[in-house]
Length: 366
Ligand SMILES: NC(=O)c1ccc[n+]([C@@H]2O[C@H](COP(=O)([O-])OP(=O)(O)OC[C@H]3O[C@@H](n4cnc5c(N)ncnc54)[C@H](O)[C@@H]3O)[C@@H](O)[C@H]2O)c1
Image 1 (tube, rainbow, N blue to C red):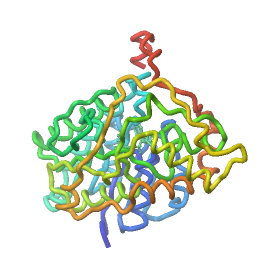
Image 2 (image 1 turned 180 degrees about the vertical axis):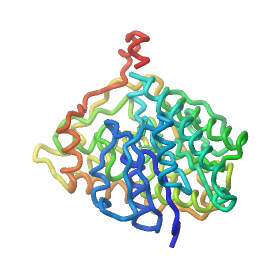
Image 3 (image 1 turned 135 degrees about the vertical axis):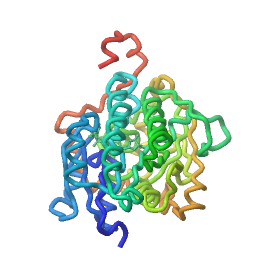
């Protein structure tokens, strides 16, 4: 069985994609998984409730910026691989408060690299040869596309938001630790994910939850911004494929050729809600409203994942239509999961607006 006898650190394992990776590793492989997570507002250990009690699963509450704590975990578990998914991930929040993004995404990746390097250098030659550090990044580092073209692994970095700039910085650090210190690193850059256990602030769950409540469904700008959507479980499989068979020092784009305009995404959700949770007042499309655009809103992302398909044999199993159907059904059937988050105080109000530009620099540093 895959990863038999190996211990894998998954940072950010209580988040959306990290929890999908942990569930996939525990379900489909023999790996021992150590979930290292600071448990920020975006974390939810309920996403891993089905795995609690597994003899292959360990949880450690730990910030990736704190080297001494990380060092203890490397010494305790002696991992064979690190998958780094811990991050501040919401673009709108990065506009209001970029400081946290700089800290976790850049300083945190630096601390993790340093501790991984220290651990790797002390391993036997055999284990050193097997060790991998996989850094999980985003296609947003490439900036915005025009009407045509795709991001490839050789596209120049041109990040436009504090979030994407912080991720771009961390990708560069990972590359440098490979080039300078020989740490066996790899990087993946993935398009927008969606699926079960997605925090309610992100576009798709936000719209489903508001639609179910009969509330307005606010679309940024003209709704024509295009994202390339990948079902989260396809991403989790891609990551373990790269971990297992990827070439050291390489980067791999991950995506499923599912470009959709935001308005199309919201309309698809409305149509599924009409079918699965009809509202006596009429079609959910009547709830769609257009609101002020996000500052610096990238127009189009589209990713070419053919290197990953060709070289490592990974293919997305879901297309947008099958994945969004599964997702809307999941949110209808798992109200307990997202209602717990709403109850503990998360507000569905808008963040990352133009008005924040009026904030003082001191506030933005926080
Ligand atoms: N969501 C997407 O569409 C997408 C697409 C491509 C790449 N990515 C990348 O994948 C990774 C995971 O994204 P996600 O959507 O699951 O994010 P998320 O916000 O759902 O989860 C992030 C997790 O990291 C943890 N975390 C945050 N700061 C930490 C710190 N300092 N120390 C330890 N843990 C910390 C949080 O508690 C949370 O559990 C990120 O690196 C993100 O940049 C996301």
